[in-house]
Image (cartoon, rainbow, N blue to C red; front, side, top):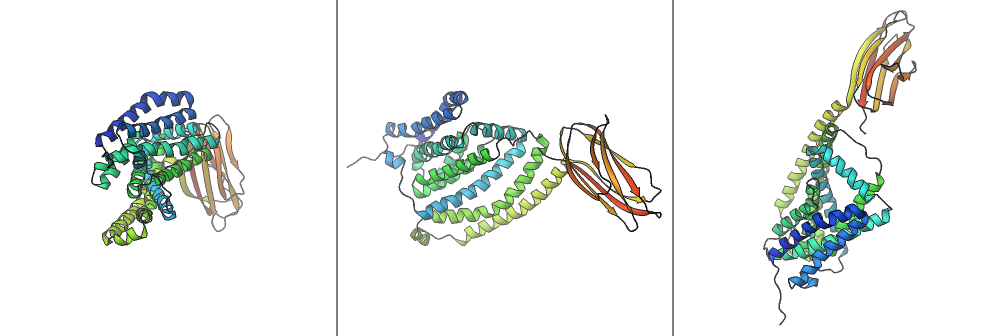
Length: 408
């Protein structure tokens, strides 16, 4: 009779700690020296961390890393779970941005530059294919198998998800990677087929790498205050979108199982009620945060906002002037609307002049609507509004001027 070696709980944590030490003291210097190829070697080492202990602990490799051809319904289930996890992960990312705005901007640019330093196909192989194979072998393979002695499946999923968040060695990436880790661990626990978490991991990383190439070179420095306010808007939008996440999780989890298993163990009404409550919270909270964040963000972007009524005639010869302080170099949006009242016959012109006499905006007087962007260096400016009207009798015109700083 063949002896079966039971999973050893301590083995999961021992190998996890060994992998962390390997990442910090060996992999990090290699990646700094070799770039993308250093990441390739790192993934090979992580795969070794998942395979070698199998033989040290006397496990069977096929039990630790089980794989078989997945059903088509399971593939669709994985994709639904990925979309749901992606939304919740983005929510965690925006929450982190709210707390650490400048650090998140720097991390995003650093990762983007690292991933796009070369052709896209090698980057996809090293950053999407290799992690899907190697990290899953370690995390959903050896580590999750070693936790098999725990009786509660949700506890295994919780532990593996948290360890996966820690595994990325960054507090800035902890929440998104932990959420992804929950999804990966859940899929493995439900199916006992490592091909499926590998599929999710590959799709997630491939999309991330592709987006990095799509926006490569478009990332500029943004001040922390603007990022914080943008994060509030982002949280609101993603929270609103997360209203579909509970239903994606329900649908995805049902697709992972066979039709027979779903019939034997159908979802109870309380699950649907909980999903509906969570969705309602996401919708209401998302709308509220988006409105608050957008208002705050718009207020921070606003440089000038004036609206007034001017009485004009052929006798009007006095211009109106507005001082404008441009604190930082950048692009500024000028939106000016002139609304002539009954009897007003003429036009209004606008000129933006810097303190040194340089003219940056000089709009023709026949325009009643101006919407343009101007590149301005920091400094003191003056916006002059000049009136040229031919009507003998006084008439009113409405003028609205809004100047906003365009985020980089």
